[in-house]
Image (tube, rainbow, N blue to C red; front, side, top):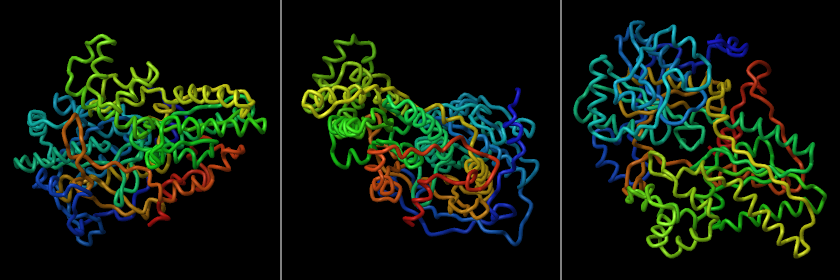
Length: 548
């Protein structure tokens, strides 16, 4: 594989570990933990792994040579910058414990475990992927590990390869699967540990003890560069309104971070829309009023940031989607029905309010809401062209305002969806360090003999050498949610807090940004140069530390 000049230069970069992890460590137990909600239900489902203590690593004054171990690793779910460095850190970590340790990667996600498809990751392989983007070292997939026959089939190959620990690198659903697998293997005495690592560019896998999921830093910086480029063009041409949809199905962290970095004219925060019980028309009117106000000053241009999952946060739409998810989960032959039959079936089985909302939608949007679900039973909101829906409705609203003499301008919308552009980018220095340390830390959790834990690093706004290493039980992040029409234990998603510093910083400035052209142009990620250019974490992370 031919390497670019940047790849060659970055390959030699050695990520900086927390000082604690640079030598032998010992695990120190904290207090027992409880799940964030639904404690009795979660405890019954996880009798062997519920209530375990938090762990922190400290220097070990009496180190001993560890035994060689065989470890398996899985990349699960969507890609996120830095995944390769997690594997590199895991490899270096187990080799530091004992140089005879071996690492096996299961191909194309959890399905590789079930189907016994794997490759041994040797130093020659690992060294090709240090500090690179993507998940192509072993590939990823979205197979859910939730059935006993899958667990047992996976255990066959783990036993055959002598693997005693499995590291699952994934988001909330993937780490939910990791906890279920850890519980089952412990229940049957399989002798296999399961450790998770927090991955998702969406930024919704975090809490008081998980400060950030990896990939968020890089992805938002990539998107912010693109938004800045568009805003520079917007300010230069002075004739287009750019409607930009950003990844983030279940939370608006990406949109909020990009807004803080680039200062657009409009940014919609889904959580605020839900909190204020706004309708789709309310959102449209808000944008249209800003367009009209800017046009009155002769500014017929601007930028609008839209979270991918906005539709699901509009209360009436959220209720409709929830009903659709339940109906389609029970109607296995829905996809085979003719379109008019599908519509008739839905109109007959939806509640009156949801049927009214469904009937009011443009045909294209209504159709998009009934497309195939993702593996977790949810509507694939990335397929809903919310940016086009909003610009079309804003155009119609502006026509009404023009008839009323309240608008005299030109509205020329352009549309963008930034998603895959950021998922496999070369990791920022923050993500390169963070991911490597997460993997190295996971090796120490394995050496500590625990299972059902998530690799955890804290104090992330400090230099990486000052980060605090340890682990938290995955079950402490659980609550019960409805999936495929049934209540299931899942990791609770972290939404944008409307009383948190990141949102409050945004809310204090958005009216000023709406009126003017306060655009910021972040530019591309930098790897060489001053620390204030290369080493800064996201503004979200910096502002969240103000709340602690």
